[in-house]
Image (cartoon, rainbow, N blue to C red; front, side):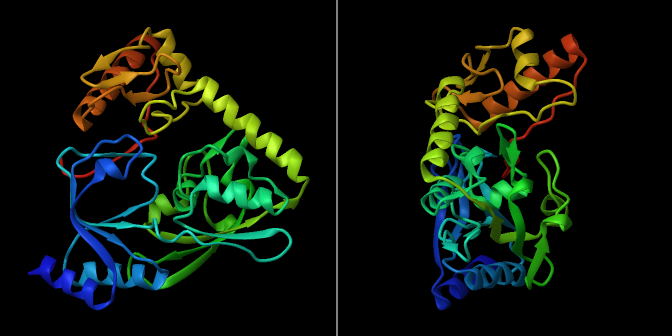
Length: 303
């Protein structure tokens, strides 16, 4: 059997795993059923082994970062979830270059840069994601994005799981998109080119950005951040607000009254609640404003 054989290979190679792991414990939405197998490699080599084993045994796999932009089915995820949570090394390579493994949080990266007197990542402080996930979607805020600070990245081929390297010019980075969305490569490490700065000024900027987030966003509730991408020429939150959708609910899912761009888990929300509310929002905005909204949140799992 594929699953039993896969487990034996994991054990043989000392790769940590659990069965029927509740994905609600691994997503910022606090929603999601069980993953058949939840695997936590603690090195890039072990990640490559785990990937090749899954292919060998015919098991589907899903790469999990910090789970901050993810909505998981109430029925869970079939096959293997490969978590990068143990790949969180940070290193100062020279006076202006920082290396971060894909599983490191953006918050830890920003603090590391600040502690080393490096500026450029202040905008990312408070974005609740991993380094790999941030590059995958070219995360940004307050006028900055990953495209401005990344120099190159290491990844794994989805075909033969060999190691690859891409420069930033070869990543097709745009608004909430990258080549990694298109080609299935698995980001393992990112190199950032920053600039020397004053630690106190960097800290002040980081504190200013996090204060803005706390003031304007419903951080006290589970969510996946901004639910919708910014439509060209508009702001999704403004459109949703103008349509009178603040406070609209479906089950435990709710359009935040603090920031209309956030669908929040107001208590006991299911995946189906969130998906149904998203459809309500899309339909109302299309009907009243003539604008098509597309989601920034990624859905995965059994339908």
